[in-house]
Amino acid sequence: MKEKTVLVTGANKGIGFGIAKHLGLSGWKVIVGARDKQRAEKAIDELKTVGIDVLGWVNIELKDLNGIKLAANEINEKYPELSLLVNNAGISGDMSVDSEHTEISVIRETLDVNFIGTFALTKALIPLIAKNQGRIVNVTVPSEISPYWHPLAYVASKAAQNAMMGVMAIEFQQAGTPVEIFSVHPGPTTTDLNGNMALDGFHDIETVGQKFTELINDGQHHQSEFIELYPIVRED
Ligand SMILES: NC(=O)c1ccc[n+]([C@@H]2O[C@H](COP(=O)([O-])OP(=O)(O)OC[C@H]3O[C@@H](n4cnc5c(N)ncnc54)[C@H](OP(=O)(O)O)[C@@H]3O)[C@@H](O)[C@H]2O)c1
Image (cartoon, rainbow, N blue to C red; front, side, top):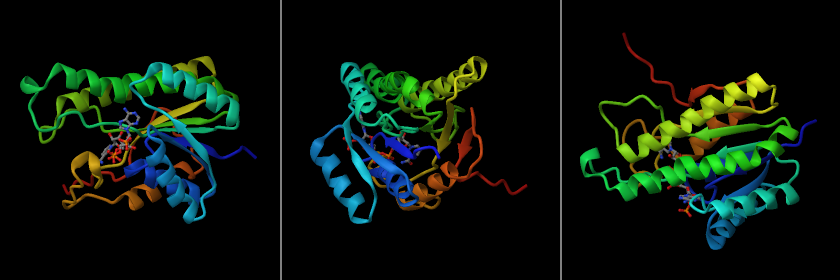
């Protein structure tokens, strides 16, 4: 049977922590991706307290491309059985301004983290994940522009990340690379990213982690899919 070892980026809090916890509770061995030792160790303590098999943590700062190479080397050496990468870490950019007032530096930083760093880590881990016939799952938002909510830095960075998923899925299929890649939109979730907003329709990280875990463990193929954890039901 295939080893069930997952690396979750940004696993020290928020949705990443919920995903790491519930995958762990369902039997996955967990590697915590974090960019701060103290925050990583705090999360590991909490995960271990509920009985999760945490293999360790890897320092992943998505703005540091050299650091990402080092992290990938470390993962190849220490965790050659890795079969699932959850690209969860991300930032919001500035959601308080319209595009005309968005600083270029904010656009650049948001792209650096949500797209370029995520791409660099994914690219560095594809050979290992292919060797283990594994999966890559991105935590994201839809690329379509909503008239109600459209912070440019964030939606542009996620659209680029979604394009990466679509392109890689086609390439894996065409080349016969044994890797599955797909995207998951968790829907509005109460976390630091949105100032812990808890309006109607928001979920908590436990519910999202649980639903995400059911999806991962459903035994189905999801190559190239964009999956809404909470599909919008239209009443017409
Ligand atoms: N919350 C929502 O409603 C919602 C909806 C749809 C999609 N998402 C997506 O879900 C993912 C997780 O978001 P969240 O809501 O859980 O946010 P969060 O609570 O703010 O957590 C973000 C995580 O990403 C890490 N991170 C931030 N910048 C990083 C960097 N430069 N390098 C490496 N790690 C970094 C953070 O680490 P530190 O603790 O070190 O900062 C933290 O672990 C994001 O990709 C987000 O776009 C969220």
